[in-house]
Image 1 (tube, rainbow, N blue to C red):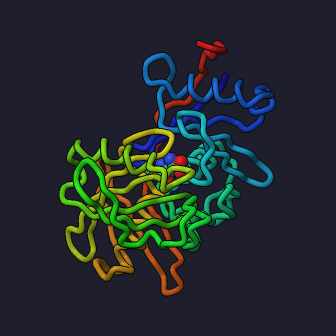
Image 2: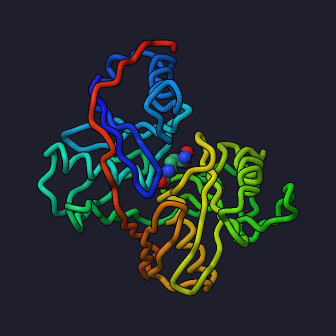
Amino acid sequence: MQVSKYHGCGNDFIMVDAGLLDLFDTDEKRTDFIVSVCDRHTGIGADGCIFVKQDPLEMIYYNQDGSRADMCGNGIRCFAAYCHDEGLVNGGMYEVETKAGVKTISEISADPFICLVGMGKPIWGNDKIGVKSDTRIWEYPLETSEGILNLYSVYMSTIHTVVFVEDPFDPKWEKVGKEICHHPLFSEQTNVNFVEVLTPEKLKAATYERGCGMTLACGTGMCASGLISFMLSKTRPRIDIEMKKGTLHIDVDNEQRVYLSGPAVRILKGIYSYVENQ
Ligand SMILES: N[C@@H](CCC[C@H](N)C(=O)O)C(=O)O
């Protein structure tokens, strides 16, 4: 089957036409395809799989373990690059439907491909982040294997928790990320962002993703991190966030609307030999 692969700051995705979904008439068949193609040894390898729907444009996003996520900030820039490369759009500004609502894309540059995503506003209610208690997850102390950490959680087109630490690239955070992601406090799990404030205009961050584990970058996670850092007066509203393989730019306006900009790169376009139940 025809597939493409893209990455945004090292967060990588398989892109396929949504028509393929008709071939997978059960959840098991769809999951089998996603897990197989995302496998880094027996498949192409990726953090997630994106089905591209046209008329209207829609991004249908799955994590590498086959779980559905509402949105993906790096994924939607890759979606935009794919639409550009396949001639599905004429550049400029357009809308993409996602499970987290309609997002606007503005192409900034074609080569290298860079775009700006209007991510919309965060949602603060605990029901949106799968937390049953009434206590707001804001400076919420949680016992972890690295001691008590203060959590800040938000729905920023998907569920995110931000933790301020020293040296987010230290490998020890992977274990802690897994603990927080799977903690019973979060009934639908949470993505976990480890964030260090470098200057009022710059953060450094790494994310443990639900359905995937530690990734090289996370777009929605950087939106949550930029927003929360700004709300805590740690940073300004326009910042850069340095991750392991690239930098994303975040803008927060005075109504808490968040904008994400950064690159997306095509890695391959080709034929994947898919054998069911590999
Ligand atoms: N890598 C993404 C987020 C993907 C979804 C996430 N793992 C979830 O389950 O919510 C990004 O760039 O935003």
